Length: 412
Image (cartoon, rainbow, N blue to C red; front, side, top):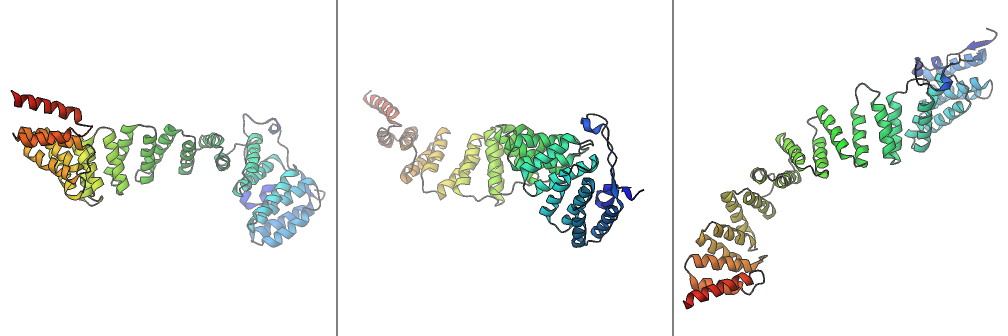
């Protein structure tokens, strides 16, 4: 062979074995006539073989020294082979910068056959991205995808998407990712999670919800996905869907934290299901998952009142009256009794409310007390309460009407 051999470049690197079939369609023009690998000198061939053997044995220092000598002489093709192998030897020492420099020099010679040149370009793009050189990584990976004569794998698009995402170029990242997703028989969780993150950054909440439903189909017991889905429906103001997701979480025992239970209560209240809201809080306080404090008992009372569960509302309000220094809860209880024409009880709690003070509308307290007294035929105390009501702006007009009416009754 006249001292020269045709060398299959990838054969020297066990990790890079295998061949790729040329794409049948949509190939760049330069792919139409792939060139055979050039010949190399016998000495270079033997040197590359020896270096490959050293790499396989893990003797990376010796391989690097050997390959560096080979880069100083021979044809551009022979130098490119030496630099490429040098890059893998540097990788064996975890020298990313050294690997990058060797691959750059090999690529810059533009002497390798198309398949090897593409593999090198792809590897170099990965190195840039892993090393945080995102702009350079994007340029190199885009060039690889554009010029490749072979099918581009999904991994290339995933690397490209991650690089764009690091630069906050979310639309480009999403486009690259979706091209990669289209190339695999089954999309991985990693791809779905990145798809979710990118759509969230772009405020594509409907797309986020679809992605989360795919993740939940695979991992129905993962609370984080349920919580994210509920949050998305809340952002989209889809209250019924928001409540439904939280209901499913609750059924699976995923809502255990106080904030989560309160969020479910809030969802039920928003969609007009106060009875369910009350049952959630009542159960949680019964199991000590929520403290039966003033704030939670007030929420419970509101749920029962809105659900027209009078007896349950009465129980909650009585507990609030006993624990609170404010008269507001006694007023609400007295007003409820007045609406039910339970006048004795109305008087009792309205007087307690006015004595405690702190009412939002004290005039209404006096006015309701006056009406309750009148219905108990206690005219004198009713008039006293009505005169008090007349001193407050929120009840002044009504109280004065009542006083004129009562005066007329007395005069007739």
